[in-house]
Length: 416
Image (tube, rainbow, N blue to C red; front, side, top):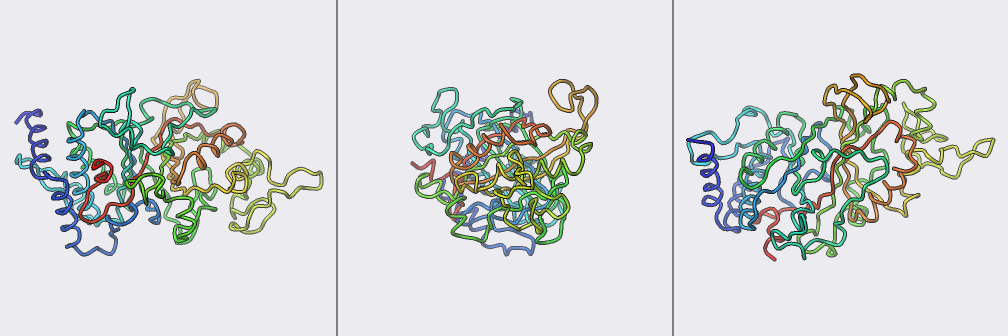
């Protein structure tokens, strides 16, 4: 069988085995519902997509896709197939074959547990309008809050690592399980969507309740809103009726790989690192305080009248008190892509081999116009960390509300 024949067979599988939106989704819901959750399995169906408020797993595989199809029917088939596959994968089950005789599931995770796998889907701006064209008749359904990200000061975005029509973030406590999930979804997308960029990420296995540290050695996410605080989550993270019925219970995702000049940072004195961050490195306490969870005092001054927490300190510029009360739910991961040759593009402003490592910054919010965009605009101009951190790609994605049992991803959007 040729590759083109196999692709046609797969397309036939999507069109035949998953014909009918309601029917396909009901199959997915029934199979998932009939299988008891393992101890390390996260539920796939619910009012919100898993992987947002879920306690962070140890590994992530983030991928963005470009749509290659021009038909809305293909979108429906893809979203049905992705729903069926994701419901099975999060249970630790394999993806069924396509009827061609070739194995459809790669089987590289056979014998592994679900490892708390979550799969979070997002829609990029290109799903609504791309190159000025409303490819799928969805332009009128794009929420007002789903704006294009501006170019921020200091951005050095690489086109091949920026944008995308669809996003998938797989998170799991096993790196192979997370990669396997994206790999299977990419196979299902053959002929309809293709991978644009991806980034792996990890977070240390810190003790429960302990804030993880990033590659700069500082605690990351100390003032995150509590995912268990329903009023705060509803006000700042979950989208309400203003986003349209398909976005209710969803959230807007910003994902941006940020390369860190670790060699440059590692040569800085501890006092300078702490002044740049606005926190003590080991305790995580705001400068002038004793404990990590103490509220920073941005009005405090030293004996000379200078702010205890510098005007350009990272935590000051990111604080809700300095951003009209706006809050975001950070869910970032460190990354390490090995070594790369450094020329003029990257600090520390010399040629040679350097770590291609940094932070896959990930955050969720109810309205990026009131949260990430104004907050990061200030940070991109004044943050002391900018001399070490360079944002190199990413994008903004609309993550729909949770998938209910008996429906498929994007069904409420496509049904309009």
